[in-house]
Amino acid sequence: MKTLTYFSAHTSLNSKPVMSAFLASASKHYKVVENDMSADCAVIWSCLWAGQMAPNKEIYEHFRSQGKPVIIIEVGALNRNITWKISVNNITTQGYYGHLENLDWDRPRLLGIQLKEQTRNNGKILIAAQHHKSHQLANLKSQEGWITQQIKTIQDQTDRDIVVRSHPRSPLSIPSQLPRKLEGTYDDFDFNTNYYCVVNYSSGPGIQAALQGTPVITSELSLAHSISNNINKIRRVRNKANEQWLTEIAHTEYLVEEIEQGRWISRLEPQL
Image (cartoon, rainbow, N blue to C red; front, top):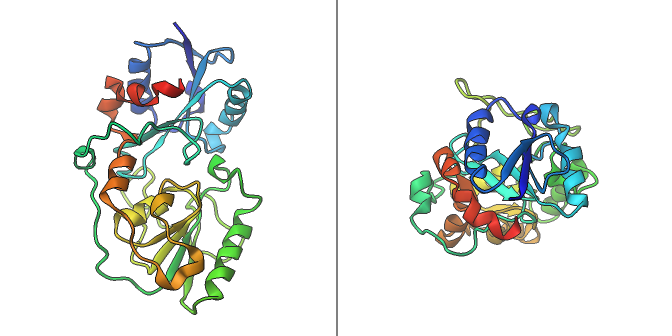
C-alpha cells in the first residue's frame, strides 16, 4: 500500500472537518502518515504560501521535484465554505481534477449552484486581483504589472471606468479598493458582480462572476478560461457561461460528506 502524508500544523482554522473527512477516506486506500517527506504522495491545505500554510511551499516543491503527486485541498469557489476544491499538483488549469468525463449532469443542483442571468450592470470594468503569495501567480513576475497591462489594453479600446479590487488579505501597491468582510462569516467578503465585465487572472472571482451571468476575461490558467472573452475585443464581450462548463466545474469541488465517502478518489486516481 502506498503512503500518503499530511501536515496538520500547516492548515487553516476552517480546515479541520474537511481534512478529517479527507483522511478518513484516504486511509482506506493509503497508509496515512504525518509529516513524512519520504511518502509516496502528499496532501496539503491550499497553495497559498502565507501564514500557517507558508511551509507548504517547501513541501510542495520537495514532492514535485521527485515527480510525486501533491493533492491540494482548497476552499471552493462555487459555494464558498460549503464546497471544497480537491486537485492534483495545482488548483489552476495546470492541475488535475478528472472533471471532463463521466459527468453527472445533476451535480450542479446537488451542490446548490446554477447559472444566473445578469439583470443590470454599472457599465464599469472590474479587475479582481488575488493574493500575491498564491501559487496561482507563479507564472507572473508582478501582479501589479499584469494589472497595469490589462488597464492599458482596455483604455486603448474604451473609455469605460475601470475599478481595481485587491485581495482582502493582500493589498496592491497600486490604487485599488479593499473588499469588506461580511459579518458572521469566517472569511467571506463582499463581491459585487454587477459590472460590464470582470477581469481576473486565475482565482475565484472569475468563476463567481460567470455564475452570476457577468462576462469574464481570464488568463489561460483560470478554470473559467473556456468561457473567457478576449480582452482585445473589450467592446464585444458577452456572457459565455453554459451548462457544459457548469457541469464540468461542478466536478472540481466536493461537499464534506462526499470527501469522507471518497468521491474524490475515483476522479483523481489516474494521477495518483
